[in-house]
Amino acid sequence: MSELFFTVQVDCEATQHALRDPGLGERAIRGLGDILAKTGTRATFVVIPSDIRVHAAIYQELQTQGHEIGLHLHPADAGYQEFMGVHSYDEQVRMLTDAMKVFADCMGRKPEAFTPGYASANDHTFPALEAVGLRHGTVSIPTRDLPQCACVWGRSPLDLRYPHRFNRSLNGNVDFVDIPMTVDADSRMWGGAHPQDLRVELVDAKNHYYTMEKAIRRQVAAGDMVPVKYLKAITHNTFEYSDPANFRRETLGKMIEAARKLCEKHQCVFTPVTSAELAARYRQLVSRPKDQQTLVLDTRGRG
Ligand SMILES: [Zn+2]
Image (tube, rainbow, N blue to C red):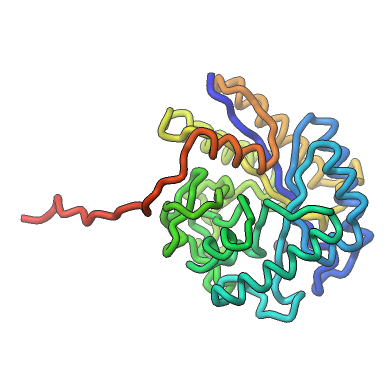
């Protein structure tokens, strides 16, 4: 029986310029803390600097309960162009360093987990994350192609990985564990630009069931080729998760229940973790290569 790691990520941005509703953010994270406790699951809350400033005490509590707190970034809030993937290496290092300082002032330690807004990234992003000492996080969403958000992933890998130093869609030796969001690359949305993924608020629990089952089947069939098998769901602290009748709350509850049942069906051990625990397992089982992935042109069709 292989372990199937299950993790939830909450992107926390209730104080973002477009929303500015810290009260909603607080109700959402308290409600999520409640659901996670009731279902025995764990989450990584990635938080923008202005949210961590107002809710640091609650994040300290959530951390004590076994959840992970990391960093999320929407660069426009710090006066940059909004999308991370349009910035130079130096700009990315600078905006990350500034945001990490706010995080450290509020939490008393540096963050290790990171996710950029819109999964926006370019080929400078992973080396910049490594340079500032971030360790893991969901950066890629395989097959999400939104050039208008500087988010172009193409057929990037579906599984945990050390990214390539010069090409974000390849594997390599950057000292940062990318945790691709769980997607069904064949089910397209938004005119084909976005795969159906485990974003709680995207669809209903029945739809998520099929995405989860497809992802489990693929990983189980791959055997040892996928040494660390997982499902990663994501949501935002911008929904009324403290309301027991809230549809998103109900959806998340049903997703967790379905994930447990699917594990039984496919003979996996349902193992709730944070992103930090997931990345640590990967680092334990897969050592970081010395060299980048070597690409060789496939010439079998010639002559
Ligand atoms: Zn965001």
